Amino acid sequence: MRKLTVDQNPAYPLYLGSGLTEQAKAEAGAGPKALLYDRAVKGYALELAGDLAIPHRLGLPGGEAAKTLQTYGRVLSWLAGLGLPRDATLYVVGGGTLTDLGGFVAASYLRGVAYVSFPTTTLAMVDASVGGKTGINLEEGKNLVGAFHTPKAVYLDLRSLATLPPSLFREGLVEAFKHGIIAGDEVLMRLEPVRPGWPGLEEYLERAVAVKVRVVEADPYEKGERKKLNLGHTLGHALEAATHHALSHGAAVAYGLLYAALLGKAHGGTDLTPRVEALLRWLQPPPLPPLSWDEVWPYMARDKKKLGSNLHWVIPLEPGHLAVQPVEEEALRQAYREFLERVSGQP
Figure 1 (cartoon, helix red, strand yellow):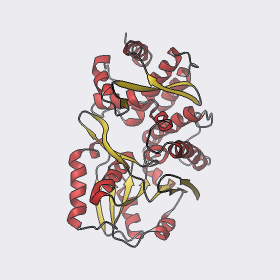
Figure 2 (cartoon, rainbow, N blue to C red):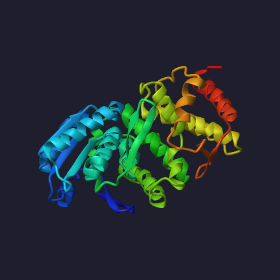
Figure 3 (cartoon, helix red, strand yellow):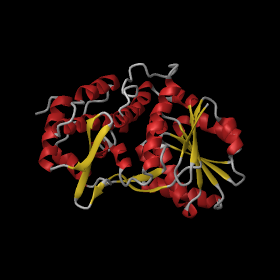
């Protein structure tokens, strides 16, 4: 078992390994407990609930459909109907959409209760469950409502990765690749050997998580350095929204990284497009629908990273060196034209 500590306010531990139930039992509080879980991992979740003596359980379908105002209200009403007090702990088991939703529920129920996260996907392990960002979507865009609310603990149990189809396992590692660009870490940018059962998987995931931990500690509330974690996400989130989430998060961010690499090249940086195109060949995402600039731009214009009238882009100039700055719309359009040519042959 490996342990990392996230020095936010308050600090909390992340445990990484196989079979972390005993550690979770040792750190469980004395107050009432409830479990929110993704139905895709029902067996794992209910086994965990039994081991931790959690009597109240609610399963939901995963995916972006879980991150709605309606589902958020349903979970709040469930907790209120149980009469759970402020010293209750909400355990959240599932992928990034469930940890986002569950964390936001915990942040707002009774103005804040404790929550413990058991992420079950590679995406949730290396990114979504780390850093205390929680939230839900609106029809107008992704993650437009949320709060910073740090978990009591995060348990990255590698056993849960056995529940993932290969495509979903790979998609989560797009975020690890992104962390490699941010940190200038070549190991994280070499994804070919990474697979379930690979002897180096635990060390690789720890390395990926550690990048986010360092960034979050330096900038807990996304005032500066933490904005770099949005690399590839401005277009990525727009593609998700424009396709009504038919395009998954991992695939959308992979496409978004290619677009960001094109912006980096246009701004005089190292040409990272061959590296990202190799990522796309490894990932084999679904083909990108023929979306025009006018179809994706409104979603980007409403992005939560917008400051005043300016949308700030994360531009990779070289591995380990990123700029965060506004970009003229014509330059964005030109990069999008080249992006479409590269991914689909569209003019």
